[in-house]
Length: 150
Image 1: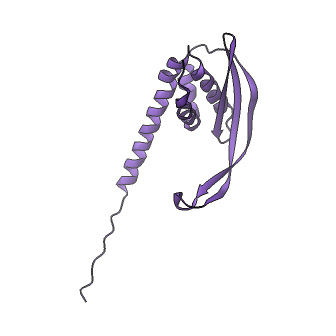
Image 2: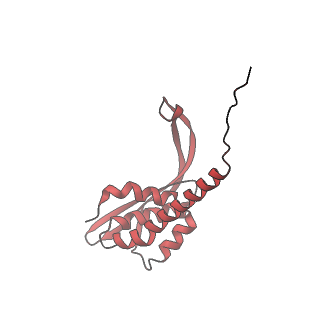
């Protein structure tokens, strides 16, 4: 049985992945099961909300372009729906994310997709974050104040 409590984590990984990198990892899976569109990839806008100071009053920050897609694969008699929501206007990325989500819910594909797609994407994201933190730390300026001797 597939542990669906990790689903928000893998969906976030798929949504934030570089589309070309996701396509490369997905191609290594070989022949994938046929899928049908329950909702073809479509673009729209979503409202992005923020909080003043990160913890204060909620406010509408602005709108952001979003692409969503829903696919369905068959798992014997059962049908599994996979969802893909990605920032921007990339229909292929949304479709691939939805297909990976559906495969991750399929018991026969879960381990393979986890090891071949999700974990490498997470490792790549962590590496990029570490590199960005190093670059930011290299430009850090330490300010100090001197007390005047009056």
